[in-house]
Image (cartoon, rainbow, N blue to C red; front, side, top):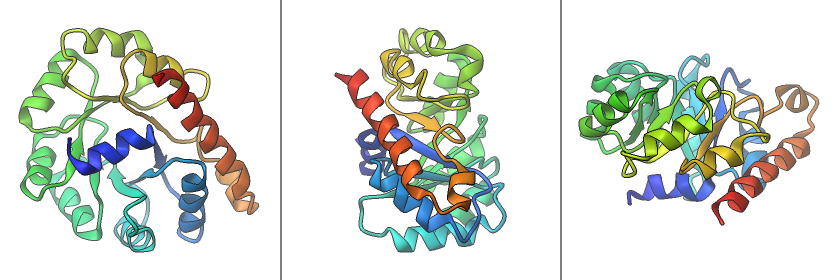
Length: 213
């Protein structure tokens, strides 16, 4: 397995940071890492995303934290975040030009899919794993149904994943889960309460670990 993909699986949880304030990014990333979430995705619709990815990649260049970019829907953005240091690229939908660009330069890529047809199309195009999005719309049963005939494709459900259902998605066959607002409380970050983010991260990683056993 690709080293980056292995690190994402080891984390079990990908933190999706959308619109994260630049002055809080490093502290939030550090709080997540303290709680065991070592895969962090900064979405491309965040202002100044290229600079943010460059900053956080430089700050966590110890090989223990994996930094990626999310909401990437075109090849140009994919290349820009690659050059900034993104180790993986995630899309909300299926864009073969994004997959092609990531494959060309050796970056792990995960398009968003909903159906078995989209999942196999993405995998045949070179996706390393797929993101079932929005996961809350279809639930764990949908992930299990896709994994039935397509067990070779790693699936990461994202969108509406929280502590109440993360374990069910893992039971259904998810190799990792993506979580945003349920994982990162920006109000807590604004107050300087990063310990609460660490605690939530710990609860997420413990839930995933328990359901993998």
